[in-house]
Length: 560
Image 1 (cartoon, rainbow, N blue to C red):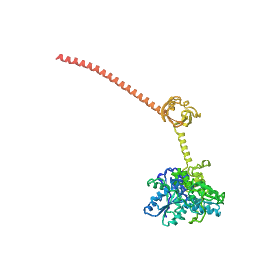
Image 2 (image 1 turned 90 degrees about the vertical axis):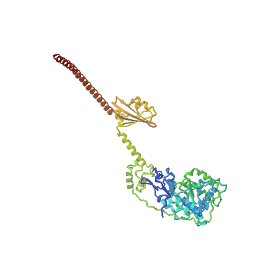
Image 3 (image 1 turned 60 degrees about the horizontal axis):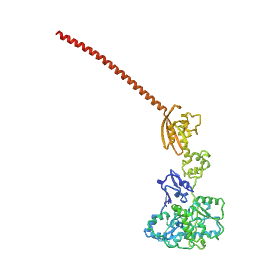
Image 4 (image 1 turned 120 degrees about the vertical axis):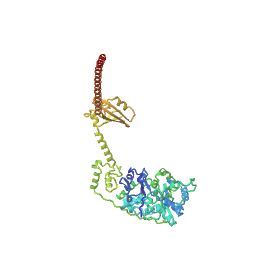
């Protein structure tokens, strides 16, 4: 048989925030290979991981398409509506009419089954045979006892839930019908497939998906019909805190009555029973705060909780508890331990894992709970069980990041000074102290002007610009410094970059260039002067030669 996954993880939407891991009361939600994974054998389907997820990374199993197919095929399909419907539909007659328009054959309140369950509880109280009686209406509580507190199975009321009781009633009247339960609860989806109850309820519809389906119908006015009364209608109060107790007659005695809500409180109460601290109690237990009105599938309708309580009270008589009498169906249930293998680890193995996680001393075991486990010891056990990533530890990550940051700041060649909003030195790194010749004193608290006198810096500190740069020479330090001034909320960060060597090199190069230009110009001038002198001499010689040659030519002419 294919294993059903009632809560599916949408890996593409997961942002690894670990909220689901932290909130899981049984630690069935684990973190393996950088992804949350649900260990089905440890999950009680309380829905806390679904409620807490801000990224829509959890999807609930749905029978909607199957139910719609039954209706399309004109099968007989009957609806059992959990009494918490009042959180969404305060008008039950209107809801019933809408469901009939969708094609359902009939609609009944699950509270009819709850009335029979209360009758069974009354019988157990009168018998006084049980050390304590723990209600079994909440399948998450039943699952918790079966998985983690098996020694208390004999204190679970041997009675089915109202859903199963009502399903049996409907099955008796309509043996061939499909029966669909409208649920505010994820655990109910698994309960209908429990081998002990299989075949009684055929499918579930979550209240949110039914609400979306009903939006397809034309809007209609509120029905003027009245809610149909039935014997034991006080059972409509079941989904409210302490609702089960309110259905029982005050004449019953022999047990103290206590209402316990929320998995954490339920676990503490169960442990107290194991420790023999509690005896002679009738416990109404619910995994959800605010009982079924706080069901995980009603998370988007929680603002209607108080309205729902009022609607329910308007349609019951608190002075008419459920009457005892013969039961029309069998409601007996047998509970059994769901043992799953848990590895055992020695203290030495756990201490070794703590050391490997960086918890090398008690001082480093902060027990912050950010990883999802109450103590570092519990986290080490989870790592050994293969349920947690040893590297996922926020304090260690912060410590490593801070250590790396300090390493960089302490060893960077640039000077770093942190100023408070008044311009006084708050922090200074070794490079800045060395630059400003402050190695022998502690400059913290000193005004920055006392070590970096600069009108430009004073001007920048009084502006609102986030980042500014400027360059200045400090003769007293024999340095030329490039400044980066960064303004944050209440502090300034001043980064000092020593440009002395670079500036000196540039100056030397500029001087050499100037000298080279001057030498070149002198050579050119000398060469031009030489050329001019040569030209002058050549000119004189040429003139003399011309005169002599002219006279010679004239003499020759005269001889002829």
